[in-house]
Length: 108
Image (tube, rainbow, N blue to C red; front, side):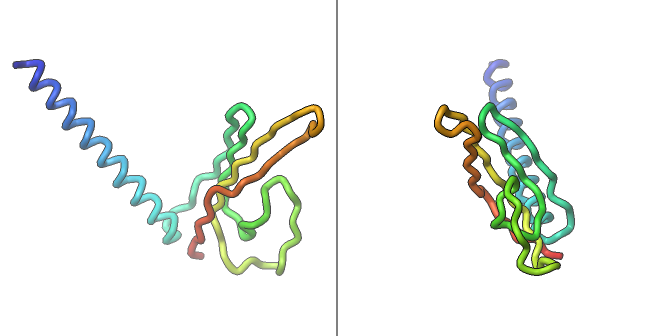
């Protein structure tokens, strides 16, 4: 009987913890979107995959490629997440493939 109560308490605690985590992430996303907080800069490598997340005025320009801005001051700020896959082969020794995973417009 004690183990059944303990199992129920652990299940309820796990469900409440996950619900709080989801609500916190949604709230953090809304705060970033409204401009109340600055999104974190992320630079992580997983073997051959490099994940970059940062704030920019030019979301269509990959992070490792120099791009010419259309104007001197960007009209909109964006939070962008890029995945850069670095595959080196015999035929392509410096191979990189950049994929934009997420673009979120931010309020100024």
